[in-house]
Length: 104
Image (cartoon, rainbow, N blue to C red; front, side, top):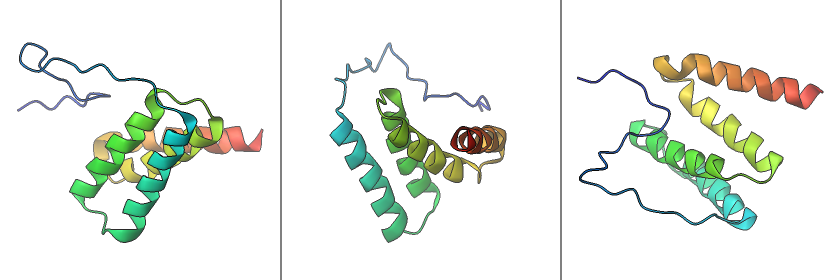
C-alpha cells in the first residue's frame, strides 16, 4: 500500500494521458467557489464530499488571478484538510498565513 501523500494525484501517464486544460476566467473561479459553498451548505460533509470539495479547491488554486478568490479557496481547503491527520500541519500553516496576510 502506498502511504505517500502527494500534493496532486499521481496519474499513470502510460495508460491515462494527461488532458490539457484551458485557463479559466475570474468569473469561472467565482462559480467554482459558489459550487463549493453550495456543496457545504446542502450536503453532509463526509469523505466523498470532502474529496469533491478538495478537487474544486485544487482547480481554483491552479490558475488564480484574484487574491480574494485565492484566500477564500485556501481557507475552505484548510478547513477541509484539518480533519485529515496527514494534512493537519499544512492546513494550520495555511490558516496562520491567511491570518498574517489579513493583519498586515
